[in-house]
Length: 316
Image (cartoon, one colour):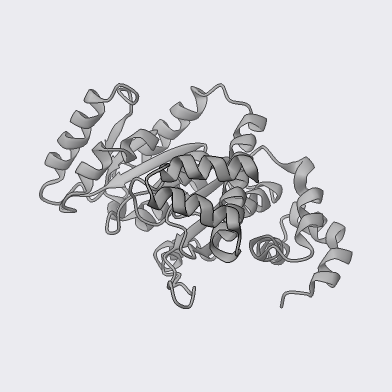
């Protein structure tokens, strides 16, 4: 059971020491405190700061039905075979009414339930269209502090709004599968830009070659991502997993970013989230003559919404 904020704060050092020692209950407790941003969280965040920057963060995203969880399950198996420890943050869609989530992704990763080298934590998206929440970034740090070699993010859906994973993960893997309709077109128009590796999963199904060719063509036409590898996998059979691991390693080895630079990118995303929340609260919840004046300017055509937003930001 989670302790009260006061109890957690007083036991902060002890908790972090237990996390560093790999105690599973302590890791679970730290994840909960940071996810909820409890009263103890600021102290815990400060205490784990010296131990951060080692973990590699790999993001998996793609449309529903592409087999993300099954592929992540197979990828975890390959990492464990190589002796690496793994933390997983599986983001599940949450109800817009209750905020609750089915948290079903863990069911598809049950091969690793009894493996102490793997810690899987589900996280509700809570309406964040990008599939991630600020809690996800804090939980990455919790796994990093616990000494996990790799932290995997599995995010909800795919689309133009899913830039969060690009700014949070070190390496981004975008999945598709045959028979998913217009999702390839959506990827051509934007989601392709976030991918370090493209994967056609369920490659044993009819239409897989066509999907692969579409993605390869989209890559070839891209001025930014012309060298993005396109792979085929059949996650249920373990096919293509070794190639995926090799490509992830190649991308990581080709990067020149320091751990500090990678963590600063995540901090920028946290700052952007916080700033957006503050601005939205100001616009929606306050009776402010300045807001009314800016809205009138939009209605009367004297300024665009973008110009009004800039004016609001500069005045804040």
